[in-house]
Amino acid sequence: VTFGSTFSIAEFAFAREARLQPVAAVHGCDVSVLWHQLPVAGPGSAFGYRQRPVSVAPVPEIDAWFQGARSKVLAQICEQAAHAGADAVIDVQPLPPVIETSFEGLSKSLSGFPMMRRIIELQAVGTAVRGVGARSGVPRLSTLSAGDLWKLGRRGWIPAGIATASSFQFGTGALWAGSVAREVHGATAIWSAARRAAFDCLRTEARGLGAEGLVDVDMQVEHHHLEWEQSGLQYAGMLVGVNIVASAIARLGDAPAPTPVTTILTI
Amino acid sequence: MTAPAPFTSDLSVDELLVLDAAGWEPLEIVCGDCTYNPGRQASSPLRSKELNWVSDGLTKGQALAVQRMREQAAEAGADGVVGVRLSSTEDEVDGWGEPLHFTALGTAVRRRERPRGKRGEPFTSHLSGQDTWALTTAGRQPVGLVFGFSVYHARYEYKRLSDFSEMGALTEAFYSARELAMKRMQQQAKALSARGVVGVEVDMRITGGPTVRFSVLGTAITIAKDAPTLPEPRVGVSLNRRAF
Image (tube, rainbow over all chains, first blue to last red; front, side, top):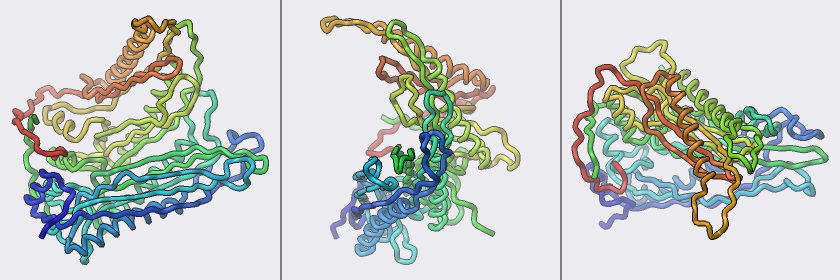
């Protein structure tokens, strides 16, 4: 039977070493659009937004939208792999997403708080393989290459799935410091909140996958500054988003003794 | 009994395995954030000078981010933070008061055989897992991340299009900024009682004005008295697209 794969020659060699049999190259894709009004906590200020204390609020709708889009892509990959009789998909590589973002409602002529409009195209490719061992008939997923899995396997680690997390936080208030040299605490708070929530979400996902750890973390961060006026009041806000994709790993029994590290001068 | 929380890490598989072999275990990704406005500082087209308030603002912002990352690591019971990446959102710094966001992100790690209980201040290092292994195997210990910034304004220099000559003021500004940034990094290392600084990364850029921004980053290390040497390396030929 002819197989398909995304492997390089070396990865193919390692796959054989790791007793992984490539079955098919698989692909998932999702294009979706989101319209969402950002949550503005607290009133604006007639004297300028600089006087307002900073209020930070999560935007769970954007988080859920991102997580949903990623889940659809991974589900398509799983479905294709299961159909091909594979028990895992490895080397899952997200292709660079195509994202278009715009904000409506920032003009004085429009009333209402800012509305985020976003179109995203997510894609991922991977190689469906046999030999990892499925749980509940659902193929396991991993972003790791055959070589990485071979090395992890020698230390008693197996792939446990792909963990993903999204966290968007929107803050309004005193986000600019003028000419004075100092920390802009409000902006720091928004960044910290977004990062902390994303890490918490990632850990929860990993626990749900029965994982003991996460490696190969890919974290993308975005931020947008917004200023607008409504009913004579001024507002300023900042949206910070964190998206993370990582490979979950779990121990299979007791860990064998580590292989002594050899230093190699690579040519 | 509940299962221990899974570790999170910013490590590659190679880093995880090599640190594991050296007796280190990852705990969690730690990240410090700080948005800092370096303030405004005027410059004259007639005179080259360092925009010292701005340089100081960059240093303070980055230091706060690193300090917060280290506090998270200490809270997690770590002995150190490896693979630290420093970044800032804005590249254009020319003394006109735009806030920058600084981030310090790394993986908190703990020595397996070390008894639980009170630990000292965790070290920070921008070295990879492989470098950390090589360093500790050779009896060197990372003690802390050190960095230096200098933002230097160059005086205006008239040149005709036909003048194919050196922009002397700009060259001098680069030299001065580099000296100041390096000196500040070395001062930080000295404050940590370090023997030296390794893995130094340099970033220099020129913005409007013209203004030169020079930043350096390294890991300060100490050397044990009876430091062993690394095993003799073997020669290998990589056949991979990726480094396995």
